[in-house]
Length: 281
Image (cartoon, rainbow, N blue to C red; front, side, top):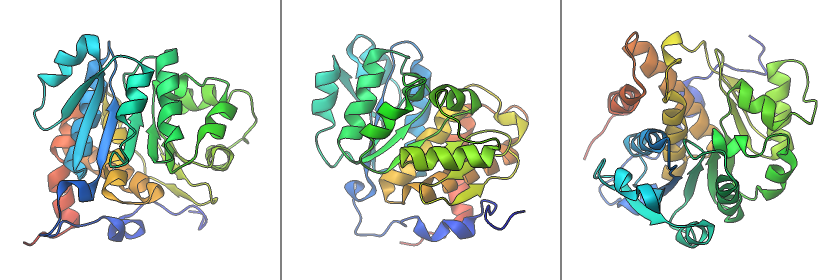
C-alpha cells in the first residue's frame, strides 16, 4: 500500500469523536437538517435515524408540505417540519444552531433540490451532499464549487461522480480523480465503491478496505450520508467524520452479512460505537 494513501483505520479518527459527559445537553451535539423528498420518502428516513444513532443531538426532516404527515407519523425522535418552498427552507435553516445540512437522499432531481443545496451552502455551515443533490449539478461542478463556503462533503458513487465532473478531466486513476475533485471543489469527497476513497482538499487521501457485497442494496448510501452528517454535527472535522462513517458502515455490513437491509446498519451503530468507546457516567 502506498504510504501516501493509508488504509482507513480507527487510529486516524477515533480521538476526534466527542464523548458524552454528564453536563452535556442535546445542542452540544448539533442539529442535522435533512431535506425530505416527495416520492422516495424512505431515503431521508434512513439518513435521519442513522444521524441520530451515531450521535447527533437533534435531527429534523424538512419535508414537502404535501407529504409531511408521512414523515411526521414515523419515528418519534426525528422531528419534522412542513416546508412549502425554497423561501421557507431558507428561513428554516437560518438558525445557526442547525449546524449541519444533508441534501440529496430521495430529494428528486429538481430545480427545488438545486436551490436547497445552494441555500444550505450559502449559510457557511457543514453541508453533506448526496444523490440528487449532486445529480442536479450534472456537468456543472463550477456552480457547486463557487457556492461552497463552509465545511462540505460530497458522497457520490461512480455514476454520480462522472456526471458531476463530466466537463473536466480529473486524471486516469480513481485516486487522482478523487483528489483532484476534492481540491477543485474545496470539499471532502467520499467516492463510494468496492474501495471507497475519502479525499480532502489538502491533498490527503484515505482508502477503505474492500466493501462487502451485501452493501449493494437499496438505501445503504442514504445511511452512510446520515452517519457522516451525524458525526459532523456532533463536532468532528468533516474529513474525520467521513472516514469514521465509512469505516463503521463497512464494519457493520461485514458483521451482519447476508440478508442485510439498510435499516440494519443504523440499528447496529450503538454496538459498533461501544466496541470503540467505553461509557461511564
